[in-house]
Length: 87
Ligand SMILES: [Zn+2]
Image (cartoon, rainbow, N blue to C red):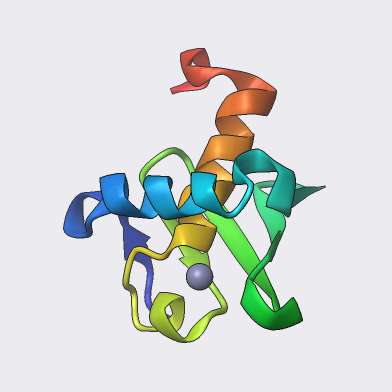
């Protein structure tokens, strides 16, 4: 599984998509930087965040290292839970 790098994708459009799908509400924190994200058509994906820039997602785009909205949604959730001061 390739790592996702926020700086190598269109994170703004992914944030917009994540918000359109419910934002932090589609994300379940599992602890230790792991999140379960509800995708479309009943799918759920596993997202791992490493800090605020790197991570991984089990969806088809994410496994190729592309910034996906599941990853963006997990960032939104982490921001809501921890605030950006943890950067
Ligand atoms: Zn994904």
